[in-house]
Image (cartoon, rainbow, N blue to C red):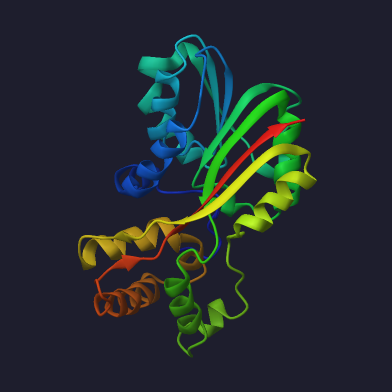
Length: 267
């Protein structure tokens, strides 16, 4: 990961994400398991990342097509490498922001996992998704919600106020929006969705050891925070402090993940 304060926060280290994203993949497989597909649908994979779940989606669509979108060019490059040999004829990939979707009545289904919390304007997000679906089309999605990683966020926010980090992180706005089930449902309905179902579920995740915790949290959770720090030494100190605190938890290195499930049909 780049620690340059001018780094482009849209970009990810896609190779590291592909290797570390087992929790996200396990949650995403459950989301895909809720889909009831004929096999010939046009599907938008919104926030396809490195393509690990896109492959499962394409397997379920032997006569369909998938457009995977992501804002990160690194993620799209990894997805092409991962998927094109097996699915190139039925797969398209494009760089696109959720808040600027150009599609009108283009998809039968929209699927997304572990992505929507990175869009801070959910009103606009869900309006765009509704517009992209054909009448009667479905959204099946999951993202961070409710008290997601609350303990880790509280620790990071306290650390950001200390003299070492305050010059760079004071006033920093978290890059996520974690809605609860009721709030997510109302946002979907305002966007025009019907037959809305939402729920929040706990997804506690215990990482293997200090090294795993440090690498995961640095690359998956706090990459935007760390882009604000001007040196590798400060990044390392930030992560060392959080890792030492997590080592004292019971159990050690537990991330208190919570997932918001979202389902709705386009009117």
